[in-house]
Every structure is written in structure tokens, then in C-alpha cells.
Length: 165
Image (cartoon, rainbow, N blue to C red; front, side):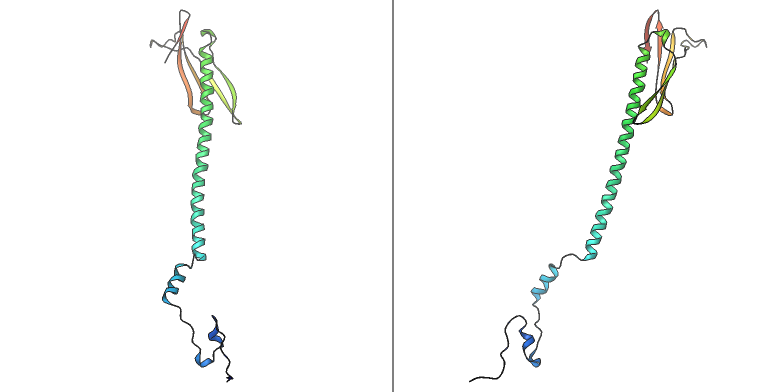
């Protein structure tokens, strides 16, 4: 005995092939709903927000890094200037007393020109308003850099030269 009714094809979409009266949408189980909510991933807005936050953090860290590099470079330049000033002072203190006199010199540090000035006037040590012939105040400085200077007093006491700190 054969029946004229078509047998429904079994499969995940078999409900589409059943007569309209019998159609019923399959309802997902509560467990399936929980799984889809938990595994849904990130939305586009969440991903963009994360990128923006990371970009802001990278920009602020980069700004601090660049500022530190500039500060380090300025410190290195200042160290080189201090070294040149100390070298000039040591050179002047190594000269015979009567040859120590004022002058200037142009030096280049990291592509920028600086002028190192030095002076060696006679100085009054005993307070009588008359400069001593055997004492000079030696000052070495960098023009335009007020914090970069050295000063000492050079004394010639019977051909023995010494400095007073």
C-alpha cells in the first residue's frame, strides 16, 4: 500500500516542508540562549572605544618620552659647557701669575656657538680699597648662560701661586 502523501524530508529545515497548518518554529533551549549571549564577542563600538583609549595612552606616553629626551639633550649640552668652562679655568690657573689676563673664545657645542669669557682683575683682599698686586679674581663664564660660571682668587705670594676657594 502506497500512500499519495509526500513524506517530509528530515533535516534541520524540515519544518519548512511540512504543511502550513503543522508548521511551528523550533524554540531554542534556554541553554542555547545563554551560550549565544556569552559567545557573542565585541561590538564595533566596543572595539573602537578600546582603540581610542589605547591611542590616548600611547600619545601621552610618547609625549612624556619626547619631553624626557629633550631634557636629556639639554642636560648633555649643559655638561659640555661646564666642562669647557672648567677646562679654561684650569688652563688659566696653570699659567704664570703675570700672564693671567682676560679674554674670550668662541666654542661650538652641538652645532650652536657659545662665547666663553674670562677676566682676571686685581682684587682687594685686606679691605683698604686698594687692589693687591699679588691677587687676582679669575672668573670664567659663558655669555648668555648666567648659571654657567666659575670664580676663584689666584694669589702670587713670593712667586708661589695658589688659589683661594
